[in-house]
Length: 158
Image 1 (cartoon, rainbow, N blue to C red):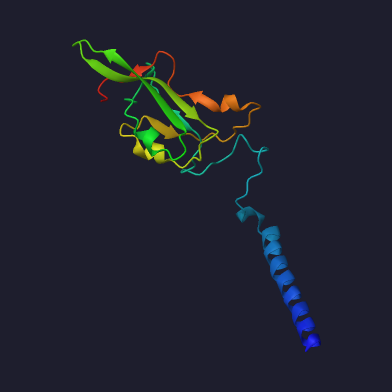
Image 2 (image 1 turned 120 degrees about the horizontal axis):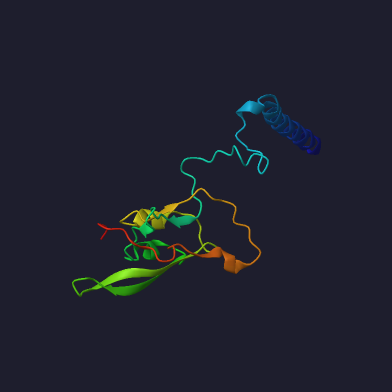
């Protein structure tokens, strides 16, 4: 009984080895089909997938205007508390108080790149960028302010 199990284990090990070697041999002979990219050697011709999710960015136009109304939908949708919106109240020409963003803080060190904040944004003010190199020496460098200095709400966005 013991000898039968012994040879059964040897057969199983050899079969497993041959299956693995067959897979390795395939990749060795079909290297053009392999999708692994040689990073960082190919930074200039690096092709990221269309749906790649990097860090969150706020889009601004040439006039330094954005579409963020400060509704906090993205802040509420974020499961990690990555986004913090600090609002201020501006007085409109009609004399009414109007909510506007003072600071849009993004904590990259907490972000899981899930994209829930982008989906929750009713004005498409934020999007996922294609950046993926986030190595820094201090954690404080991962906290970013997404709205540019002196930026304002784009006309027609409410």
